[in-house]
Length: 111
Image (cartoon, rainbow, N blue to C red):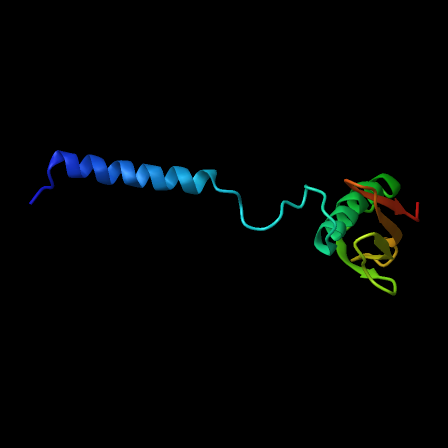
């Protein structure tokens, strides 16, 4: 048996409304491009900048970022220093990250 036209329209509008709310809802988790004082965001900024920096330093050997190791005492919300590890042991190197109020100021101490 078919539903009356009004029921079908109401069901369709409810589906569209829910889909619209879902589409407009913010994504779960933080946007890595939005600077915040978290370790994940700092590491994203370090890795992102590293790739650009290393490509400029060694255009014939593209970087393959693997990981970051923080020097003691480790990451703090103000920043820290550490080592970038690349799949190619000849690449990577030391970095210093400092929170500059609304972005991570990163100094790559190589190249």
